Length: 118
Image (cartoon, rainbow, N blue to C red; front, top):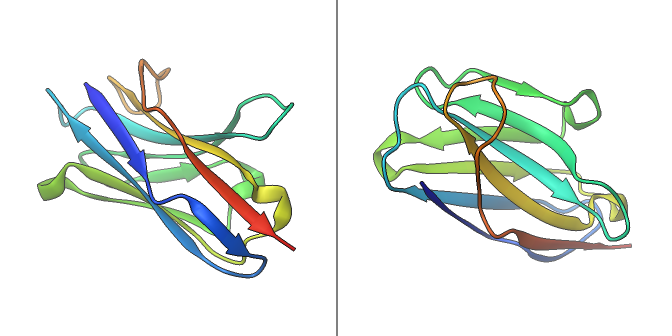
């Protein structure tokens, strides 16, 4: 499985951004797709995940409300919609895939930089 994240960039505080994660290779319906982020000098942080088959989502408590994950099965693409962005959301955002929804993530994309200016 190969994952390609895109859509990062520079945005002002309060703005929105949508990240995409295109998956290629053998994607099975049981897979889960997740988003993580890592700010400079900090540990990687879980954002949320989505079931490839059902679309069921779950999020880290701190991400609920402003971040929404969705997927387009026909395009093999998962999205992370980020609204009301804050400077503390600045980080490299990574997408990842797990072979079973809710299990650990085995495949990782290269990351896309999101910078939120104040």
